[in-house]
Image (tube, rainbow, N blue to C red; front, side, top):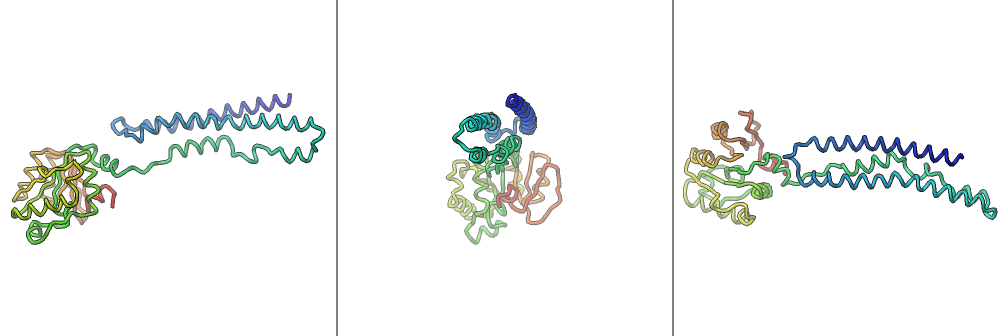
Length: 280
């Protein structure tokens, strides 16, 4: 009768434990599904699918202590019925389950916590998130993609692509229609820019072609290119152009080494393009 009472108590404890675990998992699920559907990515979908695995695994963990206790009572009963086994040896071989196993509740919570550990997003995921899933981007070259900051510099030396921005640039080309543009003073400057981009491997990724690198002879010419293309994002270093385009372009990123006041709600700023995406 005593064994029956212990079984009833164990079942009651297990019942309460399952209720607590259910409430905990429900809280985690509610957090997961508070995300809007358009922000769901492969990682989120994988988390939903894997949740079922975590629940089954945890259920097996919850059952194992009860099964072990039942087998332990059977071994203890068999040992006590065997006169050839001393009571000292029997007591030494029976180890209370509480002493060697963590509590059911802490084990269940550990399993769920491990499953919901935050996963560091990839650079591609950060780029898509920062650009709000924008599909067309226009960007000036000087001071953003190139080390040079003025058209006059392009007349006297070879153009140089900034190595720190290259990874971000290639990620943008993977899912965005990217157009690069710049003001140049002569044809030689234009050739130097194209050679620098080609040597950096920008055209080998398949997302950018030479026809999408545009040149003009004036700053207003670049502004006109942007308005004609109607991008989701424009990236520029010229504050006047950024201000002029604020009414026409959905989002803009002003690249400036100095902290600037936000001129409009749709204008963001950063010292460099890579810092905007947190990759530097």
